[in-house]
Length: 77
Image 1: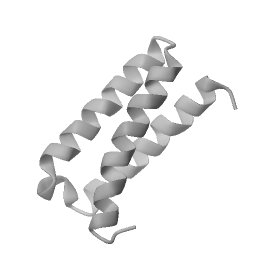
Image 2: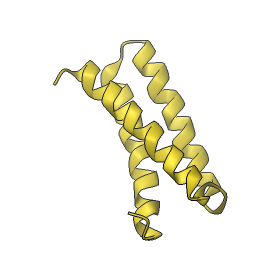
Image 3: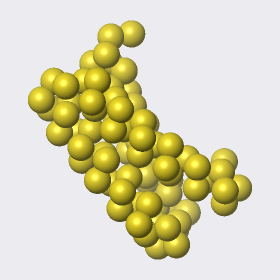
Image 4: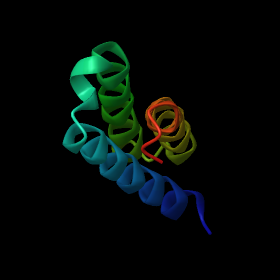
């Protein structure tokens, strides 16, 4: 898989997990982490638009890890 495809896939995955986080109403309980993840999503989208796919991939995965960890702690995953 090319880096562009990988970054695109991971940005999409991040958007999905953030939406799940919101549906579970965890964005209020973990407000700071939620805001960090949303900011990393913006970064990932920015880097993707600049064709810096490596940085886009990294930002998306970092944010995904934050949210995924909370979902595991909350036993939602």
